[in-house]
Length: 460
Image 1 (spheres, rainbow, N blue to C red):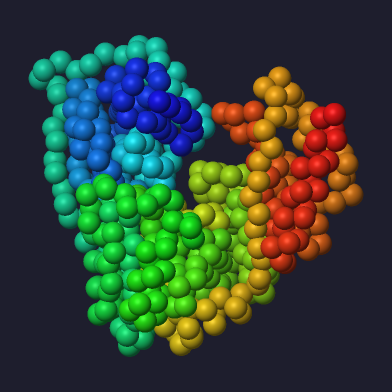
Image 2 (cartoon, rainbow, N blue to C red; image 1 turned 90 degrees about the horizontal axis):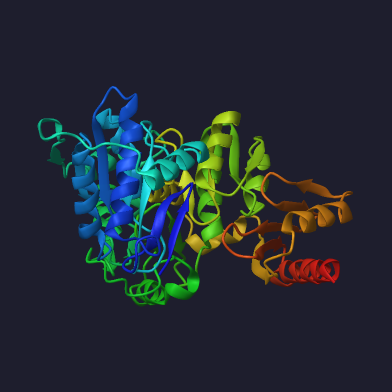
């Protein structure tokens, strides 16, 4: 059993001993701590809660809602929802914050508390540490009976989210309707099975082939939307002669497309394609994390903008986007962040923008993909001894490549003329993750192997 406490929330496997897995005791103490911190200086006593469809969701939701009521918070319960829907609901409700109950792309035995501030954005590292410290100390009181909070169930946010997407100026509903797209959808039997088809229908898509769209939490395959997990979607696209396929993760903040030939558009290219459309209509800058494809930089420059890199993690990308006033940003895992909507990864926004773009291009998805800058990524890791000083190792690698462009805001990224490599140490294991990219698969793998060999030499 596993319990991971980090900036991104409290995540763990269900069951086991307190402190080892995500048990009711862990859920209660960290929910109470977060709620107390939110209510401390807030004008509102409201906290928004929503969950994905995983099997443990109802149990975790009951615990979270009851705990928030026990500290005097009024809970706006969205029920089955998505991460971006809760992010939108928090400021719409004027709430003090929100909690999303989802372990994102992790398998079904996992669940998590993802914590939002009053803007509907993920809390900062400093705020996260405060929650963890208070939760561990249990240095807080619960409300007396006359001051208990209330629960308000609200199932209106599916439509409110869709309405917000349709209201975006660059979402062209009429162009999408005229394109008469045929689209297959794989929502891994989570809440995307409700939200994505509903969005497509209101965008004017008449032919939808839903697979794994029952929101019952029975994940039919690994829920991370990667090529090797989406064979059913590929088959559905080809057998139905669909124009494209759409896949999302359980909480609907990651988005990938399947081309009409049954091959994956590429999770790295979701953001690239949406940025290509946004930048063609809105001049400005872009941001992605250091481990994302160089194609975003190329597209940004082609449109006259400036590309900026951020440390890995959505909260870091958002911080950088605000700093440079980016018009679009996100992460190479299929995460699209469009500030004109809100500062959170949102698959619904990504779908609407991509379909608007595709409808206006009038091209097959594979044709458009071939026109984008072509890069290939390789992902590797090296397991090290627990006593090794990984920071010192990265310093030595930086010194070795001091004549190249080196970025050290998150591990070490080395940019070469045609390739790049990003070395990141794990916060939970004695390993270095090695991400590399090049103009061919062979080039990406070669630069990764070269780095791995050089690290081994330094260790010896």
